[in-house]
Amino acid sequence: MKNLKKLAIIESLTNVGSGLLLSVFIAQPIIFYFYNINLNTSDNVIIAVYFTLISILRGYIWRIYFHKWFY
Image (cartoon, rainbow, N blue to C red; front, side, top):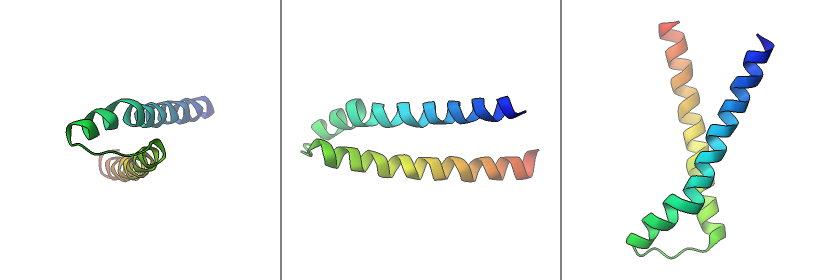
């Protein structure tokens, strides 16, 4: 069971980390270009971190909900 928890943490960190990197270096620059939004890299990273934190919280809430009602 302990190994399962370790793998779950690694999976979660990989998921969140890859999402953050994709957002900062691919998605946001493309989207911002089409909307003519000019931000420096540090502002771009800050926005991505905010959305990442919101995503982590959202995922946690859904996981608790599903485990409470369906398991």
